Image (cartoon, rainbow, N blue to C red; front, side, top):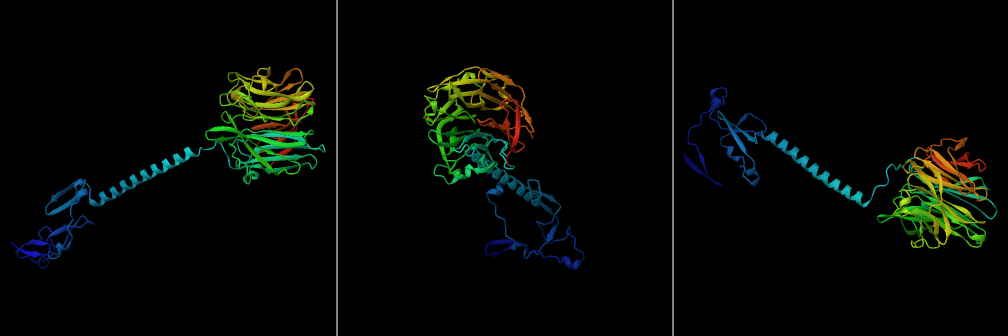
Length: 461
C-alpha cells in the first residue's frame, strides 16, 4: 500500500490492478470489483468511478447526530443505512409530520390563550342575542304617556333593536302617526353620551305634563355595567314638543341586582302646586327593593327599602303606578314578586317611608314561572290593573276597585294577532303593549271590563 498527499491530508489507495469489468461481459455486482455506495433515492447500490468517489463531501457528526442511532445491516457486500429502524426517506417524512403537529399544537395554544384573555376583558353579552329581525330577541318594553297643552295625547314605547340600540316609537294623537327615534344614535354625538345599555336590560319609562310648571318631559331608565357592577342610568327628552330629537343622558351611583327589573312613575305634587318627582323602583345588590327619588338619586340612606330582602324573590318583577292619596294623586303603589309565590303590595307613606307589606295583589305567582309585571290606572286614578306575564307568554291580572283586589284569571285579547308575548308594558291611560313574533302590538283596556283587551294596531315595525 502507498499513499498520496491530498490537500486535506494523506489518503490511502490500493496498488492492486483493477480488472476492466466492462470488457468481460455483463456486469455482475456480486463479482464486480467496483466499489458501491448507497444512493439516497433508491434501495439499489450504484456504481461509481473509484477516481471520483472521493469528491463526495463527508458528513461531519454534530451534537444532534449523537441522539440518532444508526443501524447498519450487512447483506453480502451491500450496506443498508437506517435511522431508528426506518429508511432515511420514511424517517424524515415522519419527522416532518411530527414537527408540523407540534407547531400546530403550540399555535393553537397561543391562539386559545389570546381568545380566553379577550373574553375575560370583554365579557360576552347575554345568550340568545340575535342580530337579525326587527327587535332584539330578549328586548324588554317600556311605555309612558303625556298630554300637551292643546289636549293631544302622546305615547312613547321603548325597546332595543337587534344592534342593542334603544328605539322609541312615539304616537301623536293629533296626526294619528307613529314616529321612530333611535335614542342611542342621538346620544352618539352628545356631550353626555354615548349610552351603553346592557343587552336585554329591563326598561322603565315615565312622562310628565305638569301644567303648574309647564314641565313636559319623557324619561327612560335602563341598566348599564360600570366596572363589575350594574347601575341605573337614564335618558330624557326635555322638550318633546319643540325638540323631540333632543335627548340628554344621566348616570347614577345606584348599584343593582344583576339585571334588575325596573319600574318608574312621575309622582305628582299635592294640590298640583309643584313639578313633582321622578321615582324608580329597583332591586339592590343585597336583594332589597328600593325606590330612588329624583330629589336625591344617590342618597341610599334616604332611599329606605320598600320591601325587605327576606320577603322578596331574586330577580323580582316590579310595577309602579301613581295612586290617590286622599284627594290628590301624590301617592304611589308598588307591586313586587314575593316569596314563596305572590304579587305583593307596598304603599308610599311620604318622607321616603313605605308600608312594606300592604297586602297581596295576586296569589299563585310563581317566581320561577314569571317574566315580569306591568300596571296601569283607570277611571281617573280611582282604580288600577296589575298584569303578570308568565314564561309561556300567558297573562293573569288583578283589578283594584278602590277597596279590594279581584283576580282576572284570563285576559281576552279581542281581535288579537299573536299573543305569545315575550315582554309587556302599560301606560297610565290604560293602553297595553306586547312583543310577539318580532312585532309590537297595542291593545286598549276596557276599563269597565278589564278582562278584555281590544287590538288597537301594530306599533312596530
